[in-house]
Every structure is written in C-alpha cells, then in structure tokens.
Image 1: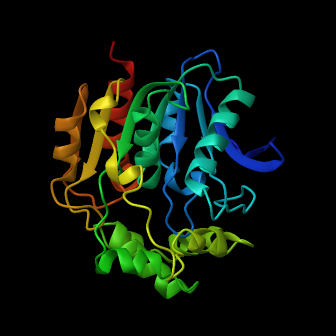
Image 2: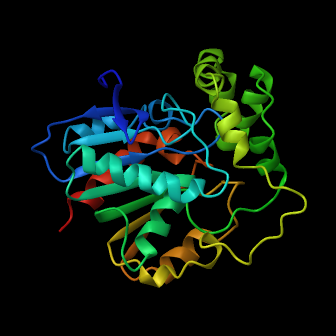
Length: 277
C-alpha cells in the first residue's frame, strides 16, 4: 500500500507529496499529476505508485494549487512558477537526476522543460501520458473546464476522461474526486488557469504552442489513449516523429487516463522503458 502523504515547505509553500520505494534505488521516478478539477498525485497515481516502487524510489508531489499543496496562483506566470516549484522540490529532496513521468498537463509541462536549452529539471528519461501537442477546444474540453462543484458534473468529467463506464458509475470514486476538487481554494486555483481578460491581447504564440520537440535530448516514451477526445487525432504520432529518441505506446481501450484505466499496461511499459539501457 502507498505510504500516507507527507509535507515539505518549499520557499514558504506547504507542499504535499507521496513517497514510496527505497531511496537507494536511484534514479528517482518523479510522478507529476494531471490538472483537471480535482487533479492530485493521490488520484493520478493511485494504481501505479506501488508497482513502480518495487523497482524505483518514487516521488509524487502535488503541483501548486492542486491536491493538498498550498493554493497559490500567479496570474502573470503560473506555468513557470510550477516548473520552478518542481525544481526546488527536487533540490530539497536531494534528487540529482530523475525519470520524469507526466500525465496530461504535466506531460506537456515536462516536454516544455526538456525542450529548453538548459532544462530546469535533471531529466534522465521522460514519459508523457496523454500530454504534449495542442488541445482542441471541443465539447469534451468544455466539460472539463466548466466544473460547477457538483457530483453530477464530476461524473460528466469522468465520462469524458474514461472509456469504461464503470468509473463514472462508481459513486465512491466520484466522491473521492469530489473530496479533492472541493478542498478550500482548489476550485479557485484550478479555474484561475482558464481566466483571460477580454481586453488582454495574446502576445503571439506561447512557448507551449511553438515548442521545437526535436530539441528533446533524452529518451522519451509517448503514451496515448486511442479514444482520447481531449487531444487532436494523430497528435502522438506527430510527437514521436519529431522527438529524436522517442517511442510510442497506445492504449487501445483508454481515453485520457491510460495510467488509471489501463494501469497494468502502463506500469509494465513504464518499468520496461525506464529499465532499458
């Protein structure tokens, strides 16, 4: 069973994280969770952390504003604030290099870091599950972005992110996600990322929209759900074609949450990839 969560203060920010496995089993696997309403380490990695901890030292922090970490949001630079927070977390935890595994938003975040001339994190290998590329502004995305705090809406979010209806039909699972999504400040911090003043002009393409994936210099595993409505069709093939040392694994029976819905496949493939020379 996964050990209870711990807290560490990073530059004044109370940061929640999960830890499992032996520290001597270096390098560390850093698990970074997805960013839907209620996104948190304990939900993203519920079915993965114990399997990975049999082979590696595992750390899974909650991002700024998510889970049980302080609900901090910087309207002028939250994206880079998250990157710095994770860098400082790794420094405080004395992690010299890491296998980085990111789900959804965190997959894209990790790819952004890996594309930089001087990556902010000491990445040894990278796994991006349902992350990277551009996200379509479709009906499925609108369901995710408009959460009103009710169990009914959380159920619709789960219906979008999963293929098997058992997840949305599980009242206990919905309640588990509701508990995280309704923590004080959680809705506000997650919703803040969706805000943009109507008079604020975009300053051109953002860093995420103009990434040169050919600059990623670490072995990369791209994982994608074949039935994911939250990503553009063919996005994973495009990513793998552009990243020099990349491979692709497709979950045939998953949508956006392959690490949860196909946990056994996810665990097997990630362990294989990370252990390869």
